[in-house]
Image 1 (cartoon, rainbow, N blue to C red):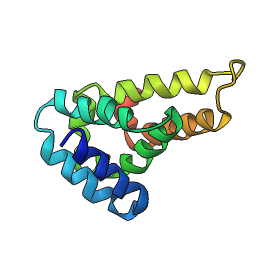
Image 2 (cartoon, rainbow, N blue to C red):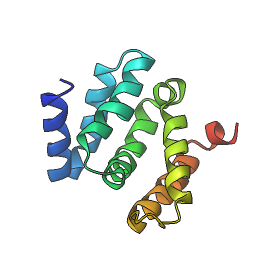
Image 3 (spheres, helix red, strand yellow):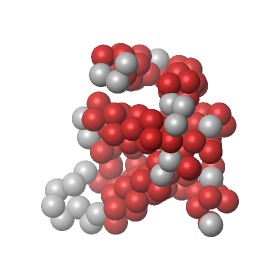
Length: 124
């Protein structure tokens, strides 16, 4: 699943954003332990995206469904902490090295969405 299946799942998600909920349900079934959650949402999905901006956009699309179906899995696995760190790093990027302004905007948007959806976790 991780290579071909994941690639096809993400391709389907790009072509049909309305399958985001089903995608999260599939990932939730596949990820029974915290390490698998982290592996899928951090490493494998990021490896399948072409840029940080594309990754941030994809996570932003999936996040409401993830928070509805399995918030404990992403908080306990350290995945949310990774997203918060990535968003903070990208948001603070001043673009002097030619980084994309769009990635900075996406990072700020995802950061605020994480804060909104997981307020208690972020504030703790």
